[in-house]
Image (cartoon, rainbow, N blue to C red):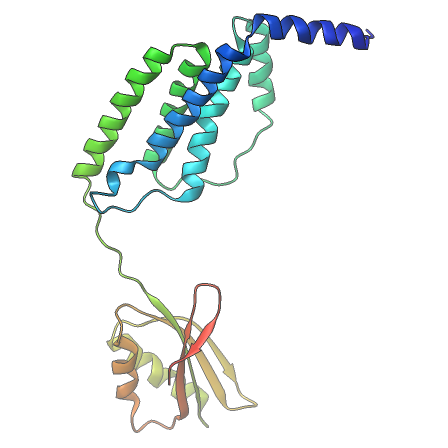
Amino acid sequence: MEVSIPALFESAKAEMSSLSITVMLPRMLAAAFIGTVLSLRPWRLPMRRALPKADMIQAQVLLCAAAAVITAVIGDSVAKAFGLVGLGGFVRFRSGLKDPRDAAILFLMIGLGMACGHGSLGLAGVGTVFVAALLFVLDLFNRETPVATRQRLLVSAQADDLVGAEASLRSALRERNVLVKSCALDFDGRRLELEVEEPVPGSLTAALGRTEGTPLRGLRWTAVGPKGTREELT
């Protein structure tokens, strides 16, 4: 069935008349505001807690606003609801959520966004206060243990007996709980390289101090940055 362009304009005009911008704009702004407040969790600043990651903050804000828009589009139409559910089946999220609490917060964001899109701003406001208080209590009793930063280093040396030199290096590193992630042996150049992670600063230096007397030449180690940058240490 062919639809003429004037008919499309008439349909759009009818929808605009039934859905006023002055009515929908406050709903969209309320959804974006609620998503921003709950995703940022500003009460974590005086608690000296780390704020959520930027990608999770943006995802929660966008999801809350998207729920408001979808609810406004559906309205009272059952056909639109089933149509949007069908279209949503084509969407695939490749990034998994490591923390199940993030998934629960996303569901709460959807509910609050739907309340804003429906026009129930009072219900959305009460729900926002309740969810914020609940998250505050959970953050208050959730004691985050500081994670020790493991520094990546690249240890290189030269030796005539590479197999024996590797064994002695691994033994010394094991005594100081220094993790060996990878090893490369260059038999032509009589050179070996070990990529390691030290649990605490100074562990590698103490471990390499136990290699005195072994047939190693030119022993040196290099700090490997998060983006692969290297900084010569010795």
